[in-house]
Image 1 (spheres, rainbow, N blue to C red):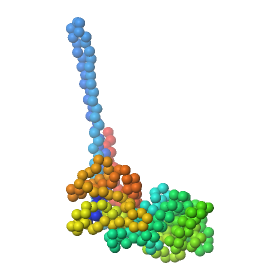
Image 2: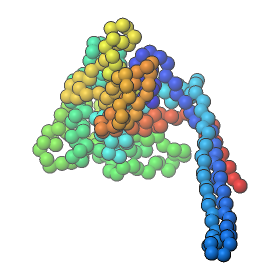
Image 3: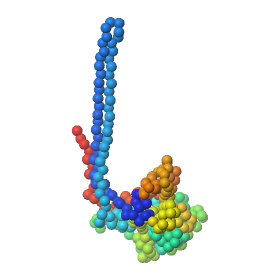
Image 4: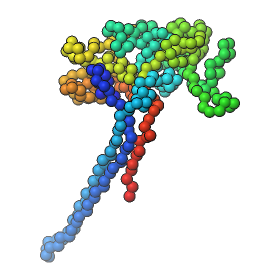
Length: 330
């Protein structure tokens, strides 16, 4: 993944592989030897022996490039917000999650990989919204609800709980819906932040929840429209925020680095470059006689990079027939 990010930074084609076969090979070697030495009287006799054992593992992995429909669905197609938003329920920071995956929220734009100017054309209000959502998430004043029920008619009270049972009258699995829920709180500071979130999202001042849908703008009142990115778009965004040598920019090998705007001006994944590989790194790749790496003591970058790997697994809706695992027996 890190190598693909650097390839995109220099306009080289990335490569995405799918595991098709795993062969677990192992070999056990052992040997024992010994002897008995006897001497004439006056000299003691003795037994001696020794033994050795070695285990050798040599697994074989078979990969094939993703192409055609598989490539389109896993790499090019945007990931549904219904798939993305529940990740925040597991404790992942919602601001980092949305900076990686959302191109816009209700018309508030995130930076673009090749946007206008060094800031990528992002909206400051986009980052203010993410900052407020993160504060509410930390305080427990916001959550995500997943349900198989459709949106409630106007004036009807929303149901509680993390999920509702599907209508038994309809056969087959029901589509899931995601809702942003602003939970009740008595803290004046949190109430004020919730009010600001409603204002930025064009929600009713007393709305307790809103359905999250895919798109640039909501189709009906009370919805939150998130225009999500594909895996390729996410990797591209990280790529153009990567630190590269100034000579490469001046020579035209790669465009200038895009800088985030708003409250958070630090890239989600800070990737350094240099002629030599540092001693302690979280991940590093060599590309065209230059090293690119993520520092091992940079927790935020490591967390964001881990989130990228989780999102890549979620984006893989189309697979090859599956990896065949072969284990020798006998």
